[in-house]
Length: 375
Image 1 (cartoon, rainbow, N blue to C red):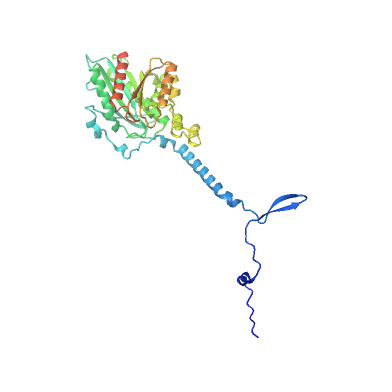
Image 2: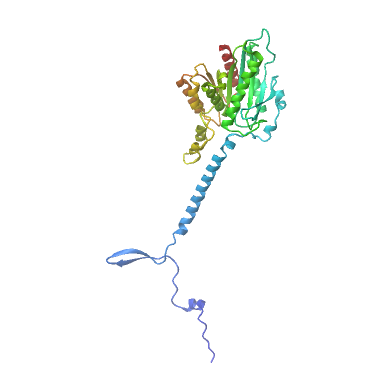
């Protein structure tokens, strides 16, 4: 009288039913149609689930590369020029390094570029004022620094070179050294760029010529002007020399006699390839978007039009930034163009140590003395 049948629930049917439900899996079978056979899937294969991860990963990688390339193009001047590194360098004073300058006195002077930008120079004048019976030779060394830090930390090394020149010349030559504070560097105003710094160096060399004319007039002859550039400064030195040599206007009165290229490189494009040697990286292919070129290779052709210009290359043996073959390529370029070039390797020196080592310091001092004696 009582109904003992249990409800036909799904769990109950699974236990008592002799027929099992088929498992959900892909089954592959063969069916014959018209004497042939073809593959048949029991369920559709969702291929998008397999393709989605690699597609997303590849898309993210391409987006990352594109973003970094775009940032390198937009902020390239901030990457190339680093006037704020190390932190606090723009607040440094000449007095902070005066005890390390071997008795050489440096003065801080202010001038203005053609566009009104305020520039700062560090100038080491001869120890005594010229007068009757003083030497007839006046040499001006215009120093252009690398891409980071400011002028004061470099003064001890410059002072050591200047002291060696003065000791060897025995007061037969008056040497004035001028370190240029690029726009955006040290206490100079403005923002660093190749075009702006090119104008700054022209202003500095024009100031040197005006200084000589003011102090000595035409009675003491033309001054000997030597451009000394370190790293990126070497690029600006060749830019300036090429510009002055080919100029026919106001800039033509400033004649460059010699160049000292310390740890030089061929161009920014060549450095881009050196910093990113992997051909699968896109960064080395961004050179068409460069706004800063510093192409010493191209400048040498213009410099070669004045045969009297002499070049001294000072190369660090263990340069960790600029491959040595770039300086060797520039030397070969000079020789092919008929430019007189001297090539000196500083043993054991790294990129920023070439002029700090006694070997490099002596090579620079001897070159300055040779050029002053030839003019």
